[in-house]
Amino acid sequence: MIQYPMVDLKGQYNKIKNEVDNAIAEVINQTAFINGPAVKRFQANLEQYLGVKHVIPCGNGTDALQLALMALDLQPGDEVITSTFTFIATAEVIALLKLKPVLVDVYPDTYNINPDAVEAAITDKTKAIIPVHLFGQSAHMNRIMNIAKNHNLYVVEDTAQAIGADYTCPEHHKTKKAGTFGDIGCTSFFPSKNLGAFGDGGAAFTNDNVLAEKLRMLANHGMKVRYYHDYVGVNSRLDSIQAAILDVKLKYLDDYASARLKAAEFYNNAFGNTEEITTPVTAPFTTHVFHQYTMVLNGLDREELMKHLAAKGIASAIYYPVPLHLQKAYRDPRYGQGDFPVAEMLSKKVLSLPMHTELTEEIQQRIVDSVLEFIHQ
Ligand SMILES: *Cc1c(COP(=O)(O)O)cnc(C)c1O
Image 1 (cartoon, rainbow, N blue to C red):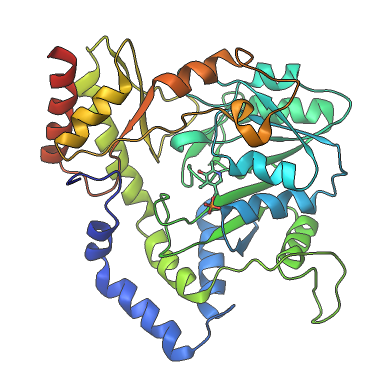
Image 2: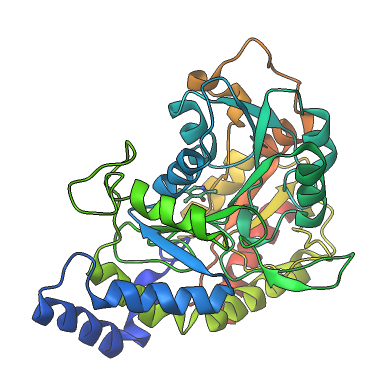
């Protein structure tokens, strides 16, 4: 039986139960289930938190990415560059819209997209870049934005795992939230994300008034005036109950990030002198909100370690076991085994440990001891 799961949503809920229950009850009392006051309130508060002009709430993070690409008016066959080491949603929306996913490798220490590889992948068909802020820290946005500017490309940021992370430009020393550099940022409110709803949810954000209006229309059947459809859109909404819950949790997001960081530092200190483990590295230009605590195992049998932990009631997980270029649905004659050596190495060697807002030092010590016991047995 798993006693120490990857996330502890129940423990987190218990601490804010009254506030959350009241917020849900208010929506039910108002019966404003769709686009009610709670949605507008959450939207405004998230705009302020992110320092961005427009937040467009939608059904989930995958929809946010799809809406973003739809808003940019790309044509079938246009190339969109993204990381091969990410959750499938990032590339899925590119393929669904009949655009061409162009995959590139990542850095071995931060696991984030490598801007040199992005630059090398640009062709005259390239129209956009989707950097992913993987596991909770920002990709190198200054470099990505410079590349985009030089080649006249759009940038859509996948911030599903890094909402709240701060990026400080090494050139201009300005600090902004991850997801607010590109043309459009996208995030997910999937329950286990850092800002998680009690169901599905997502949002796109932008500082561009024209893109904001288009995103809002696309998420609502392409209409601005009811029953007049200017675009072929989709139906993608954040419902009012989810928005009410998220609005409560947004107030605690920075506290949640601190708790995650503290837990990550505990693991880092505990494993710092262990050759068999490479702890995650935070790049100097970003804070890390540790959506996942993901380490690289050196010369250890990952399956056996996972079994050893599970026998002690400790969960562990592999994010991600197969890079996108080796996924069956994304087979492409341009790519094969060996093409993206860093991502392929990571997919074989990474392991994520329990990471959430409710970890105590006692629980973490138990996890650490179990990992070290496996190594030194
Ligand atoms: C979770 C996630 C998504 C998709 O979000 P959903 O709300 O599950 O659709 C997209 N990209 C990344 C990197 C994610 O982690």
